[in-house]
Image 1: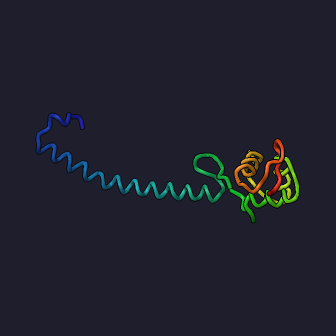
Image 2: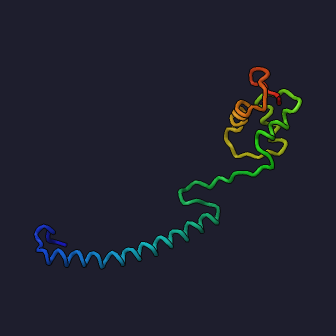
Image 3: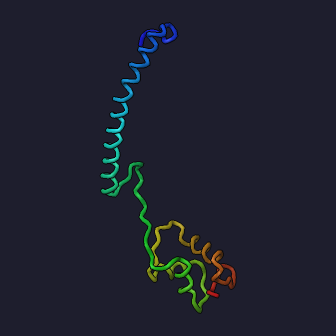
Length: 126
């Protein structure tokens, strides 16, 4: 609108409000259609293994036992370093997508209460 709203009369202001309210319905319907199209495109991208933000979705592996259970089985009757037990657990089939699996193993050994620290970086099952 070329004229300022401050210069309009009350009747002209009411007419402008009605005009704007009529256009909101069309805009809301257009928005709903565009959102439905965007959702369909997002679903198609995800079906093809991609993601909308550019990164690939990370798939978390499923294991038969928890990390603590796998560590307990690997350390039963043995003393191992954190690195060795992490390798042993993975060799026995524990799957992980962690970039820092050794750190995860170290935290599990320290916090679970099922393991005893024998020496610096060395643990055994209780």
